Image (tube, rainbow over all chains, first blue to last red; front, side, top):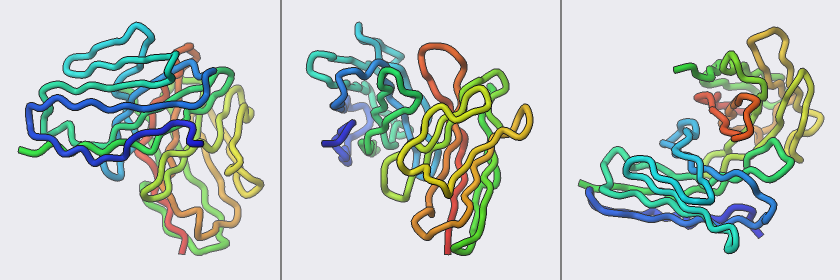
Length: 110
Length: 114
């Protein structure tokens, strides 16, 4: 069973659309959650941390459901520059390592 | 904004050769990491380093791998005898001692083993 599972996509959406990604994680002891963004052949860059109460950063909203062990990311008013792979990332309690999902690819089209 | 830097950006080597990948973490960070990403696959954890010792390592990080912090700024990953399957992007990351575990990644070194 994959530790962090994501729909690989691609999600092809027009500019201005709202798009949502989901991610599930298998370890209930996971304690920190993040969305990273990765452009082709570049390093992962932190998009936002995910908190239990849900959090928003501009056009981006992240939600965490601990009971169901899933995390979501909502992007409103998509821009061409949002085209990237979105990585769901989890840190398990007591571990230093981050565990990455395989990523969901988003392509925003003009 | 402070950044993690890595050199070289691309390393080509022959199978069986030793390579050293170099990283300069963000200056006030205390925890250092190496990850790798084989082309088309997910990012995988290799090793974490704190207080001049390995604090955690994955199954991938076998005896062929070693890490070192030779001075106050550099953090290196050595692969003693490279294999074809070591071809990947290698990312260095660092974080502060805070509890949020936000790790900041360097731009990566693309290692190609021929």
